[in-house]
Length: 171
Image 1 (cartoon, rainbow, N blue to C red):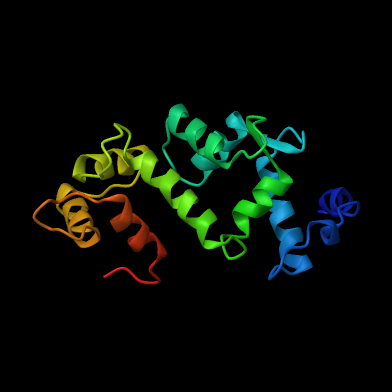
Image 2: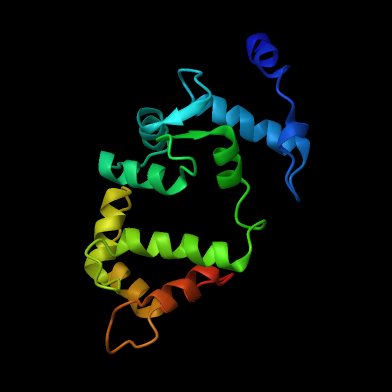
């Protein structure tokens, strides 16, 4: 335990302050970052992100992990540095509505892999399978039914998706 303490004594949480985040929370996020950054390069690369996801129980394929990393990687370095990781872990409270809408649109496009402009049961099934979630077709159909405005169509539009993602509760 002593080595972990000495590794962090040069870390200055004050440099990374964010509204609504305490210094001890930033230090905890740094500890999590260091766990994922197994080669101690100062960034989490594709291999490390995949290992971290697997350790959390996700059975993701490389393309899913690569897509996740590409969406989160702001500087295009094919890895997450601590600033990017901190932004991710601190949530969207500090972003304005336009940023939130853009982020939700990116997630929508991950579901809508064929660029149809809608999400159907098949799309949700694919994402569940990629993430290792074991939901049956009936449950997935119910999720789509609750999320879409027009049950007769049984597809989720970008507006439906945004509405669901920004609600505090889901029916």
